[in-house]
Structures are given as structure tokens and as C-alpha cells.
Length: 226
Image (cartoon, rainbow, N blue to C red):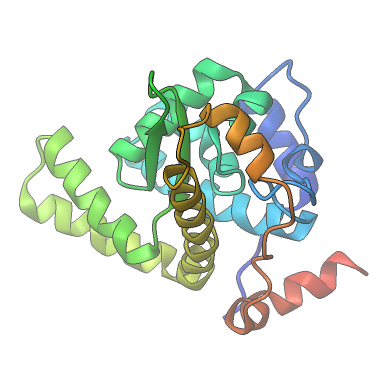
């Protein structure tokens, strides 16, 4: 199934609208030498689109606050707190990640003595659906029938993005698990900020290193190079 991705221009406009004055562009989410950033522009387009589609669904139903809405596209592309802080500032990054976790969209882990540094991964499509059910049930006084209706709409509207979200989840969770394993295996616990900077050296796998995602987005990819 072909699904449209946001263009680089659309993402740049979205970043300008949500973070005025910072001068952010899609290119700022790319770093081939840092695993916590996207390895290429295509991955930014795919990841940002998935995060934005999900947050727009929640916004239309008044299920999301502004802080997680504005950072959701970036959080599906960039996976560490230091990296997010460099992009949007410490306060916006901290509040956005906390709210996205509360909504059941991501899983974050706090590190260090003061628990200020976080690393996160995007949950898979099924886990996000379950997380939203729990979040809606706990945060809004809705009847069970209303909750079921929202979740049915979630499946109907966002299921075309399932394989894409699952691939993003796979990449980010593998990164998360490897980092936590290496961090916790240190004899003397290092400062998480410095450890993230050193550990992140390298290029992470691309979203498009998946046949299913390639087939789903092949026409989109071809149109980028016309």
C-alpha cells in the first residue's frame, strides 16, 4: 500500500511553526556519524510523517497537549535527550518526552544519579494502541463505548502506517536496548550525557533497509529524485 510522506518543505514549515525562532530544518535531524539521529533525509521524511500523523490524530480528538504534539515528529526521528535538547532546548525536550511516554507512544528511561538524561524508543503500532487506550481511560471521563470508537478510528486511519511505525520501533528499540546494556555493564557508572555522546558514534540502520517498507514507499522514493 502506497502512503504519502511529508515533503522536506512541509517538514521545514512544520518545524518553523512549532519552534519559531530556532531556524530548525529537516537537515538538522540528520547526522550520519551519530546513531541517535537519522542517517539520511529519507529517514527524516518517513519518521517525521509517522510521528506527525499520530499526533494529528490525537489533536483532532483533543487527546494531546501542545508539548508532545510539537515534538512528536522529531521524537520519531531523534532518540536521545541530549540530541533533542540540542535541537529544541532542554525544557521543551523534557516535557515533550515525558508527555509522550505518559500517552503510551514511547518508552523512555532516565539515567544518572539525578535521572535527568533520557533515552527513548518508539513503541510498535499495537503497543501504541494499547497505550492510548490506557491513557484515555485514565485521563478522560469517557464511556467505554467512546474509547472503543476512538480506537476503532485509530486502526482505520493509521493502519496504513503500521509497517512504517513498526520499523521505526524496531530500529529505536534495538538502539535503546544496546545502549542500556552497555551503559549498565560499566564497572563505574559514567555520566550518561558524555557516555551518550561517545557511544552514539556511528551510523544507525535506515528505515528503508526493510523490504516491506521499501515496497510500501517505493513510489514516494522515486518521486523524490525526479
